Length: 177
Ligand code: IMP
Image (cartoon, rainbow, N blue to C red):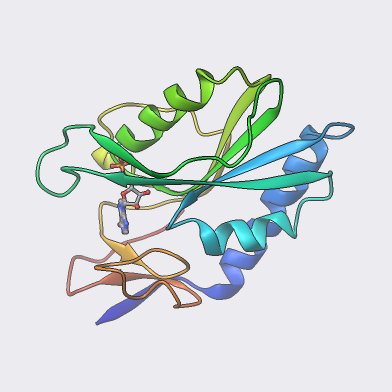
């Protein structure tokens, strides 16, 4: 059972607002969007269409280990960037920042490649579970400590196609801000 948490219209409105902010902040510059697979593919597809500066899209595939057992912070790269990002303005697009371990690892990897700047855009943040605090420059929604699916997010590879974000199971009441 999936209980709706963030309806499609709220997602669309927030994506539009974030796109406008990114367009303002990067005016006159070119942008490299690094979309973190798999979870952020839907968010990325909507977000890039709300950004009006010239950009290219790169995909970075990672698999987190121990996330649901022990937070080891071990992350495996499943797909590397196809092109260098040296001297580029990079915007990492993440689906959700939970413990922050994946993003911390990812930022280390990207910064080692000599970009001009690196910023982070995340659709969702679950601050209750934070282990490694990370600065999120553009954030969609802050949510309670619940497991969410839809709009690219999965449980065992299912539910990514839901057009809204919902809470899986019969957990406690949750809110998004
Ligand atoms: P972190 O390393 O704990 O911040 O985990 C980040 C990754 O875990 C995300 O990119 C998601 O792939 C996955 N994840 C964390 N929380 C959820 C959730 O509520 N639903 C679906 N995936 C999640």
